[in-house]
Structure formats: structure tokens, C-alpha cells
Length: 147
Image 1 (spheres, rainbow, N blue to C red):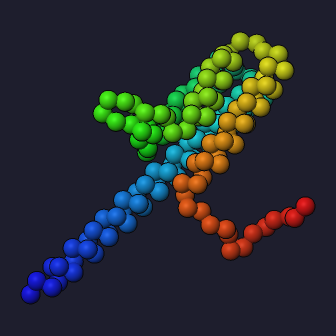
Image 2: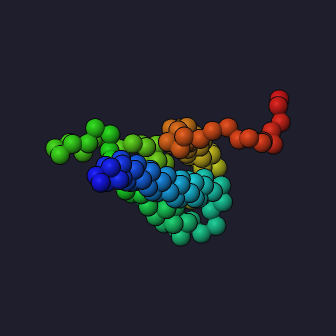
């Protein structure tokens, strides 16, 4: 009589673990989408500045949102009750600082290009480390060109 109950416990736990992992992947995907949006806006801000003040505020808001969204998905590295630890994707905060330093003032082409290069460098760092979290595999079919 106890066998169904005993057998159901591990199955319920496995279901719980699967659901938790699924929720984590959903949160990761949303975070990834928001980070792409924020960083692309930051890059565009260095290329096309039509309404600098408005665009500046929008980019900072999107980056700030992405930074805090990371905190909602991940604990800080080595976080304890007494130590706040290290932010897991520091390059995202670096992009925020680059845009913040640009401000909405008139800038020379060289300054914007330098900022864009720095943002792109940090974005490549984020992409390499963040995408490892997805347990991605190679596609079954691909449209590629070999050089």
C-alpha cells in the first residue's frame, strides 16, 4: 500500500527540479533579450545621436534595467550574509559607465568611435560568458559560409 506513495516522492521531486530549471531558462531568455536591446541601443547611441538627451536617458534606463534584472536571476559571486560579493557580469556595468561618461553633450567623431569600440569589446565578453549558461548545442541544419 505504501509503494505508490514511496514511488511518487522521487517523481514529484524530479518534476519540481525540472520546473525550476525551466523557469530559470525562461528568466535567462528574457534577460538575454533585454540585454541585447539595451546594448544595441548603447551602440546606436554612439552612431546616431538625433535627440541626444532623450536617447541618453533611454539608454541608461535600459542598461540599468538589464543590470538589475541580472541581480534578479543570479546571486552575486561569493555573496554571503556579510559580504555582497561580486557582480557576475561586470562588463554590463562597464557599458553603463561608458554611456554615462559620454553624457548628452556634443562629442567628436573619435570620442564616439572609441566609446563604440569599448562597448563592443564589453559586449563580446558578456556574450561569451552569458551564452554558456544556456547549454546550447550545434544546430542540426545551418546556413553558413566557410572562408
